[in-house]
Image 1 (cartoon, helix red, strand yellow):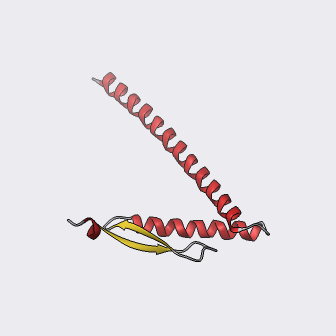
Image 2: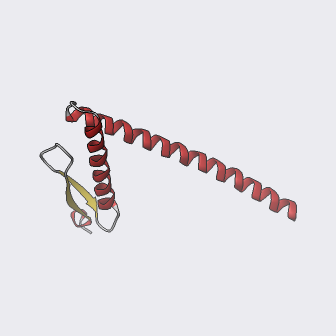
Image 3: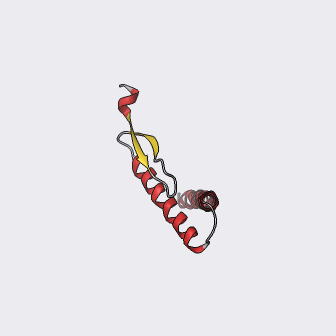
Length: 102
């Protein structure tokens, strides 16, 4: 299959940036939804910061959004690791219990 046929372009617009971003996404995937949801999230946080903290330039607002998103990513990654550790421990306990029952 032609690689170009497996992908298509979408455009997303971030606040205070005049030109939309052109992104290539894979057909039959959830990439477009993810990019559009991410764009909405970025714009919402940008607007929130801009309404609460007056007088900064757009670079500062986007920097604040980037830090927030990075923090959210790290927290989610840490939570995933904690969950994986807990599940591994739970699996060990189940295996031990089943071995005792034999």
